[in-house]
Image (tube, rainbow, N blue to C red; front, side, top):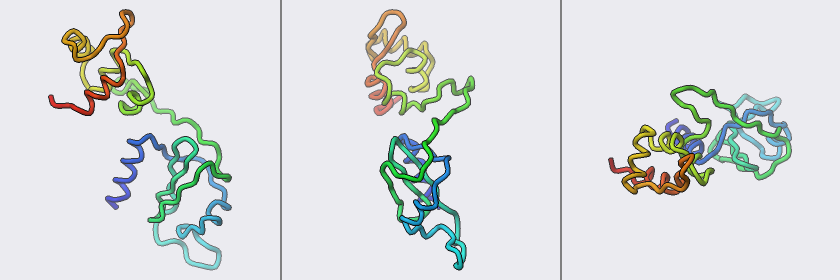
Length: 154
């Protein structure tokens, strides 16, 4: 069980998202999926297919085969994941997604990624640890923030 949990954590960290749509039965027939009940036979021992997607690639974690399909037929188009916005987590992207997808970050985004206050970001800009690319509004390069995330020593 820990292996499946580790796989899910790695996938989500890599930008994969759970697939919440319906999958046509023809997909499972083509894959000869061992996790689905076959008429006249017993039901599978445990669980079922667990699909994740990133762009046009779909990956199933339902069994050890880890079936992967690129632009498959039989899947409903995935809808964007809508995360609830709260004061504790004001952004819908994870810090890793933010530094990967955006070229420039504002002070609040950089603070969120580094788990510090916006004031600390201004201090690091003054110290030269972060480059300031715009005067108003202040922007810092995402590669600087990513480097700080990877080399965190404080």
